[in-house]
Amino acid sequence: MKKILSIILLVGVFAVALPFIGNKSIKVDKPSKLDADGNFIQHEWVKSRTGGGEDWDYNLKPVQISDRVWCFFGALEMPTKDNAGYMSNSCYIKGDDQWITWDTGPSYIFAKQAYEAMQKIADMPVKTVIISHEHDDHWLGNNYYKDVHGATIYGTHLINENYYGPRHIEGKDYPGMQTRMIKALYQNAIRGTVLAEVDKVVEETTNLTISGVNLEYVKVGYAHSEEDWFLYLPDDKVILAADVVMNGRVTSNRDGIVIGQINAINAIRSRDWDHLVPGHGFVTDKTAADESVKYFALLKDRVLEKMEDGVVADFITKEVTLNEFRDKDLYYILSPGNVFRSYEELEMYDEDDLIDYSAEKSDEDKASDTEEDATEKEEA
Image 1 (spheres, rainbow, N blue to C red):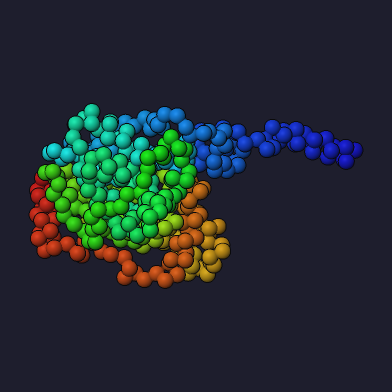
Image 2 (cartoon, rainbow, N blue to C red; image 1 turned 30 degrees about the vertical axis):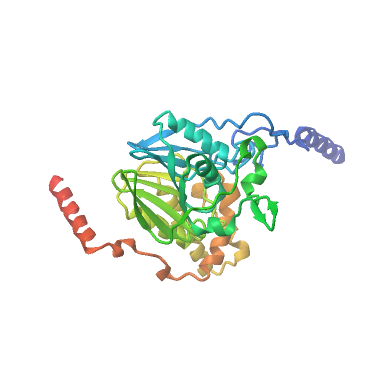
C-alpha cells in the first residue's frame, strides 16, 4: 500500500511540475527578483529578432533636476537587447549658447534621440561632453556628438588606452573593437556607433567655466572602476555622481574597490548640494546617496568582522548576505560577487586608506562652516 501511495505521489508531483520543465517563456514582471516559486530567473527568454528596420525608439523623456539640468533615467537592470542598453543615467546642462552633456549613453542612436528631445527645450548644439568613467553604457554616444556637433570630449585616459575605433594600418582598414554593448544590442540600436576617443584627457580635479556654467570635475580615482569622476555644479548645488552612487538597485563592484567607493562618497558628501543624480536609480534629492553610504559601510564592516572570526573566502558569501538590500534590483545577481571581491581586497585593509575630506578643508572653508553654524543657531 505504501509503495502504491508513493507512486501516486510521485506522479502527482511530476504532473504539477510538467508545465515548467523546459519552459523558457515563463514571464516575470521583474526578472531580477525571485518568481512565485522561489526560483531565481536571471534573464527572461524572448524570441530572437533580426534587428533590422528603423532605428530603435528609446522613447526618451528628459526630467528637469534644476534650473539648467535635465537628465534621462535608465532602467534598473543589466544591459539587455530589450532595453537596448538604456540602463544608466545621462544628463544635459544648459549653458548660455550650448548644451553640455554628462555621459552620452549606450549608442549613437541613443545620443541622437536624446539631443532631439533636448532641442525642443533649447535649440543649441552640444559643444562639450564630459564622461564619468570607462564603462561603455556611459560613453558609446560620443561619436554622435563629435561627428554631428563637433563637440570636445573630456574624460579619463582609460577610454583612449583600453578601447579603439576603426583603424587604417599599412593601407588596410580594420574595424574597431566590440564592447559588451556593441556585442549585445540589436543592430537597429547599435548601428552607427563607433568608439570615439576622448579629446581632452584630464589628470586631476579641475575647475571649468563653460558657456557661463561653473563646473568642478572631481577625480575620485579607483572606486566603481579604475578611475571615476563626478561633476559638481556649485552655483546650482547639483552633483552628477555617475556610478559611485546608485539607488534602487545594488551596485556592481566587479571593477571597483570598497574603500575607493567609500572615499568617493565621502568626497561627494563634503560638497554643498541639494540634488544628486546617481549613475543608476531615480532618487535625486538629499537622500540620493544614502543607500550607497549604507551599502558600502555594511559591506566593509561585516566582511572585516567575519575575517576576524576566521571565516575563509570560500564561505564569506554565506556569512555576509546584506539582507537589508534584498528588495533592491539586481541583489541576487551582484551582491554575492561584491562580497567575495571585498574579502580579497580587505585582506590588505589599512585604516589610513580612508580619506577624511573634512580634515582637508581650507582654513577659509572651516571659517565659513563656523559662521554658517553660528547663523543656524541664531535662527533657531
